[in-house]
Length: 408
Image (cartoon, rainbow, N blue to C red; front, top):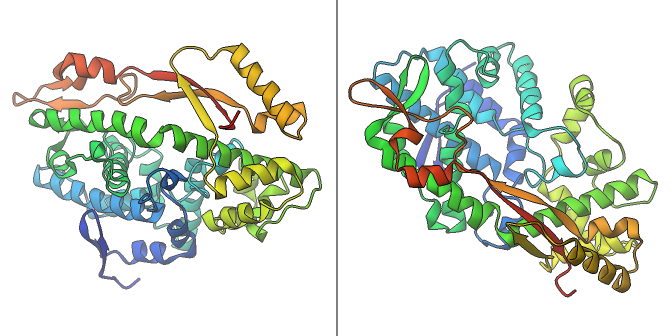
């Protein structure tokens, strides 16, 4: 395939260069172009008006960071072949291609027990057939099966190119400055020791800032109360549309959305039936929004009410607290909903939403971030960083929530 020299202008990094013909062909493919119509942060724009960036933006940004990481590691004597460079860059380019509409909403509503990572792998297999085995090494690295472990760590670890891009990008588009990180500094300090991705110790403050930024972005953006409310409601409206469709009630939907509303799909279906994966790859945010706009006028009260609330940004109130939410309080809410809404007790699950959320900025039980000291020794970040900060940031914060109509 003839080489392509293409340049994309990214608002975060400036020019992103595409010199590999197959990468360019993948980006041009309809399955990848669909990412332009998948929002990176779901309905977060209902809280932060600028958060309209997409999975396409993020994939290109992560691809650029991977290119930079490879260049920097080579300057430090880390041998990375041209084949490995192409494969690891291609893996990060495709790491999120399996996301459905509004990123995570589909995984919790109409397509159960099927993660976007699983679908990303299936799409990599699809492209591998399209390009006659050119993605063999890409898939091996993506799955962590390749002999050189650090290449997989660049894609998936506590300091991968995915996190470096989405923190900086989400901070930029939401305007939440607490999430700003110095990705250039962190990249310039990367190294490899004993096949492990490490960071030179003089970057310790940049790493601490990176982890603090993660914690703050989760509370201020990803787990913002109104964002949570909107996403829970989106999941519920899709769940209701599927319930009605499965029971034979006519629900407006585009052909791709109807395909998944009217039948149960398993991962085995995705693996064995090419048409299932193809239908999924025709789904995007516009299918869901067009459906919700029509469902506003549906005869079913639950579907109609939830749809109106999403379209008009009349979001449920959410109560978030560290300790257990009183069962008496929840019972009182349920009684009020039943007294005011024309619904059955079995439909309360659509108006009183309960659960737990967690925030873990640094997972000390997972692969830790290792710091390379001047004497060549490796030190765990927890042992080298400010103990007070890291001991707090490596703890899971768990909160319980109850979500309900705001005028009850």
